Amino acid sequence: MSEITVTFKGESITLQDIDLAATTLEQLSSKLSELTDVVPAMQKLVWKGKRSANTPASTLIEAGLKPGMKIMLLGSTRPEWDGFKQEESEASRKQHILAQRAASGPSKVRSTSKPSSSTAQYRFQQIEPLPHLPRPEEARKILSKLANDPAIQHVMAEHKFVVKLLTELAPHEHPNLLGLNENSGQAIKLRIRTDAYDGFRSYPDIRRVALHELTHNVWGPHDNNFKELNSQLNREVASYEAAARTGSNILGGETFAQQDYTTEPETTGGSFVLGGARASETPMTLEERRERAVGAAMRRLEEQEKEIEEACASSLSKDSA
Image (tube, rainbow, N blue to C red; front, side, top):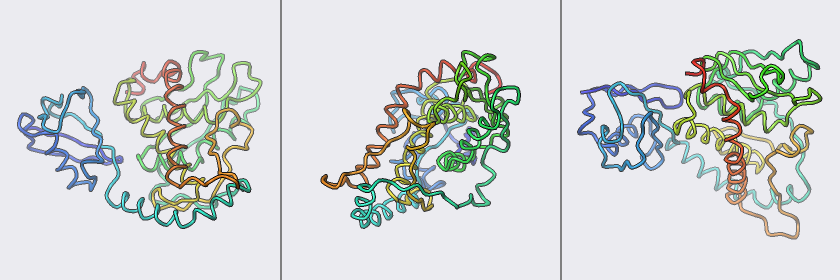
């Protein structure tokens, strides 16, 4: 008999007395459903050495699992899914109002909500620009914007990520790097400046690298496990912002004000742009608008992720292991 540890949303679940040769993936999935309330159809299990030819009938040994191995469970619980469907129904009632708002252009609203005490610990605890580089206060503003980004805060709280220090990489000192995660969250360093030090990189590009480095809090090498989680984080950010733009509060029970994410100077050329319906067009449903936004964001991510991987030192260092 063996012991397996499953992590779900930052918490560990220990399964004891597991017969790896007799227990199937289907049985494991059913057991995890009882413990986490994530239905099997919505479960995604990730572990080192996972084999692509697995079926529900595969035993744990056949699937590549070994005694003492750690598994990551991804998925939405039944209450989260029920809340999602309930909010979808409520949001459809507001379609006419949303279409009118889209036709007149988005209005910028500053959110005044604060993180709850239960999630406030999951954040970047300290922000430090490099004082020897030009315009350190502007650099601090960009790092602060990232640390206080509602979508980033949502992802960090959802996955219980804690990063002690968020700082920058100097382009002339690290010409081939875009980001670095030291000691699985001790510090995340991002290149936020242009090579010539005449400005700053676009905010969406900086944020994509930040999500990549946050993934290194869990996984070191750029293997399939890493890519699965990295894609998950980017989908969560895209879904969060799609919900914010459509006025829905489907994510985590929070309510969002419509915000204009596309007019700030740093985001031109790389922002997630959601096309609102014109007065003469048939408005898209909430589902169509959100799927379009998330799909477009993920397509852009796939094109850019290879470049980010090549410019990330975290997988090459013991610091991220």
